Length: 91
Image (cartoon, rainbow, N blue to C red):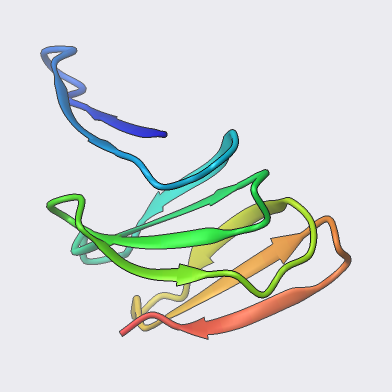
């Protein structure tokens, strides 16, 4: 599960549930409109800023250890323990 906290108050803002295992990375898109998370459930997921699921990225065969946006926020690169990197369309 991904939890987003207010850094100033420590208040929980929202929880993003969907991963079926531990989450290992989370990143906001450059414009802050999307969030990408990756996990040990062999997947990455893209969420909107309100925490609604947008897209599940399920092509990896092992843990996805990293997911990052490009500078425009239009693509996501995922890196996995299956020795593959995949570029996905985010928008």
